[in-house]
Image (cartoon, helix red, strand yellow):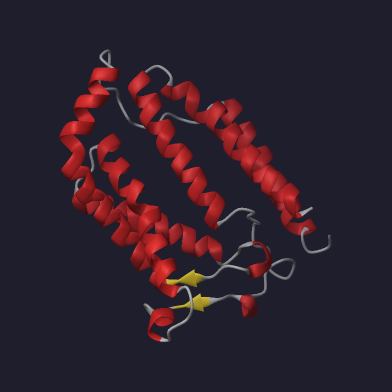
Length: 210
């Protein structure tokens, strides 16, 4: 049953890509390539940090007394817990690509990149409170290290931007800047999202009893 949860979440990410994003990005080959790489990267981050995910339902699958919170920055390191340094480094490395791709794809400045990195990390940490089996927790240290990773990624973006831009433009010579404003959801996309949310709700209830 546990493997089924993993499979469902992965299938959802694949369906969302091919149904919602691919039709919008495929008109521009450069945008398709770069945004697809970003989507794959985010999917891997979600896989390692959240999947399998359940929707928290009070008194059914969520108990506030079981919530794990660490609001003291670098508490694990200060107490010398095993693996804390390794986890800190991994969290920094995990957000490096985010700090590189967000300004490269969407032309964001330093402060916007930090804001998006912090927001992305905050969403992950918040959702980890409701992780399957309560195995994960909200950790302030992770929030800080992830943001540091985004900052370092932005510095790397500045360092390699000229070379990366030259290579990308050579590969995609027919690139023209498009309007990046997100279009409205189509009827097909609304149906897909509705099915996914319904299935997540059903699974979130059944996880308590199976």
